[in-house]
Length: 229
Image 1: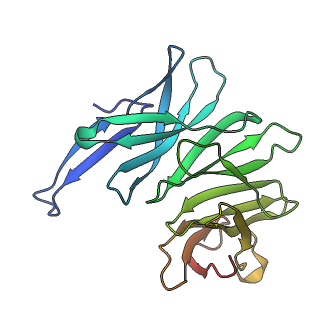
Image 2: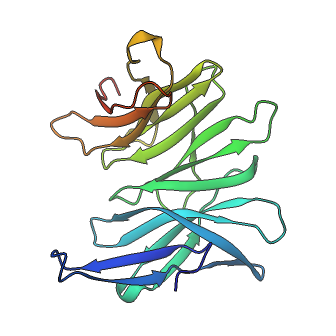
C-alpha cells in the first residue's frame, strides 16, 4: 500500500520487461518532538562509494504552519533508511527544500527569505553535516531557483524578475565558492521565459544543459554550453 504524504523508494530488479520485479519501501519518517511530518522525495543518486542517497523535504501540516524541512535519506540494503534534517537559515520563514543530489553527496535546494520582496534563494550543502551556502540569482533580481547539480558542481536553474524567467547556471568551485550565475542565451523573438531544468555530466570541459520555455508558444528543448563558469 502506498501511504499518501510519505516518501517511498521503488526498487526494480532485472532488465527485461517480462522478468522485471520491484519492491516498495517507505523511507524513514521525520518525527520531531512527537510530531510526524509528511515527507516528499525529489531526487536520488548513487554515491561513488555505493551509497544511495535520496533528498526531498518534510512538511508540517498538523499545526497548519506550512513549514518545510530539507531532508536527506541514506538508503541501505533491504530498503531501510536513515534520515537527516539539513540545516538552513532561520530567516527562511517557510523553511527550505532539497531538490537534487550528485554522486559526491552534494545537495542543492532553496527557500524564501522573510523580507519585503520575499526573495527566493538557492541553497548548497556539501553534505548533511554543514550549514548551506546561499546562492543568489542575477544581481538586482528577486528570485532564483536551483533545479539540478552534476558531479562537476555545475547547477542548472532559473533567475526571475518582473520581466520573466531567465535560464542560468552556477558552478561550485573546488574551494567551495560559487561562480555565476551565468546567463544562458535567450531564445529568438525576445522571449524571456526560459528555464534550465537538467544538467548532463561534464565531458571534455563541456557541459550540456537542457530546459524548456515557460511561455505558451515555444515547447522545444534547448542545449547550452556552460562556458565561463
